[in-house]
Amino acid sequence: MKSALVFSIISISILLASSAQAAWVPITGDFVSISSIPTGGLEVGDKLFSGFEVTGLASGGPPEPSAVTVMVQGGQNDATGDYGLRLRLAWNAGADQLINAGLNFKVSILPDYDPYFITDATLWLATASAAGTGLVQATENIFDADFMGNCIASLGASSEADDYGAFLMDSSLLCGNGGVPVEMKDIWVRMGVTVQGGNAGSAGLHEAFMLYSQVPEPATILMLGLGSLALLRRRKR
Image (cartoon, rainbow, N blue to C red):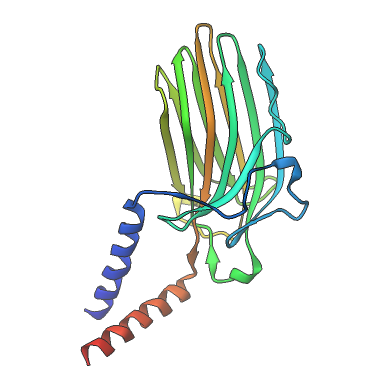
């Protein structure tokens, strides 16, 4: 009965956190270009974002995406506690215009946070809009290794058919073989974005958020549960 009570307390806390409205809390200060991030990477809370690569092409007039033009800020969702990146893109495409971009990087738990693991990811497109034949589409694939790694999560979000000013979000647990959830210290992220106007439309994407959760290892969760049980005992006395 006591273990059930502790489990209920933890479950309710998770539910309240996930249902609360999200607010972005900057941690790394002002936006900086990806090209200006130090070789060692960008520290955001308990995570290190490193190995950034930006590829891209544009046709019909928009500027080509690059590590110089893609701006980034590290921060936290204060409702869930997840740390991640806020990308300022400001990409717009009119009729017969196209922007295709790719962003690769590695996410690691910093050494000072040994009990923590990454368990899931969230992709959020802020103020994505499309009119007529316009389209905004973003994908995020996460791997367990840099080269020939296994894909452990796939996310996607898109805006089309006059979907003005939409806030589009997708999230996924990290899962290994057979769909079994896994906990990772390091993950490799491959993001792809398309913004196009088609033959008679327009599209735009102002910002994108990429968030990554963390949880204590099972032994730590057990210790937290025992601590809660001890507090309950003291209150009863």
